[in-house]
Length: 89
Image (tube, rainbow, N blue to C red; front, side, top):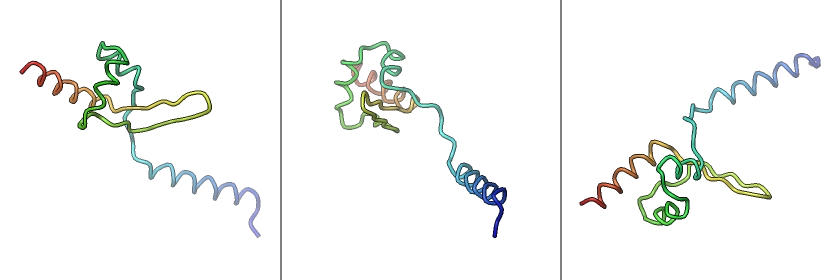
């Protein structure tokens, strides 16, 4: 029979192996942070997100009081520059 120490050590090893399998993900930004970064209001940005090729949230969190969507900053920047080019032409 395994001792408590061996049991907890094995559990720690399993957790470490699980953790190491998770790939590195760059920091994501919330919708409000993206709107502030681009210098537009959240309402106007939300209207632009209805287009078919707009960036989709990478991570969605919900709890009893609020829900947050997290986006990739680089993806948003490239989409925004393409959108600006289309408006200028």
